[in-house]
Image (cartoon, helix red, strand yellow):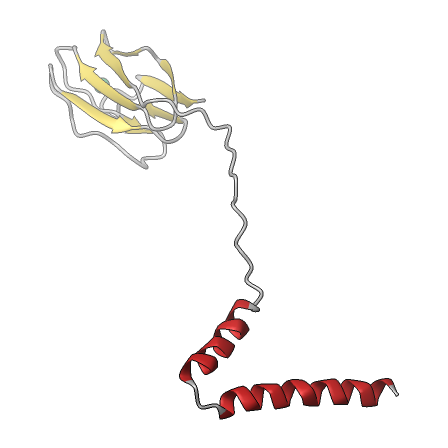
Length: 139
Ligand SMILES: [Cu+2]
């Protein structure tokens, strides 16, 4: 019984739509189209809230003086992204060479300087005077 009733209801709906379309009235057709369109389920994307606890600090510039055959300070603590300038204040030429030779400055004569942005902790030395050793600590 339920199936027959359902078929009957469906037939009534179809006949109603057909009779509206049969009118050949453009307004009626577009009204049907409009109703169908507004019955679509539209999902709105949910807003995403992203929380970060990162504290942004401006990169700093540090100076390591090379004098009296030493890097001063011999241990320098920096933040990742900081720049270090090595300034040769000795009367002899020095350089700044990473212990594993991953980077190195050119030879620095008296009064010359060289700078590098620091991304990780590294030990370095002067390849001209290998007893001159120092290190950068990134915290
Ligand atoms: Cu040196």
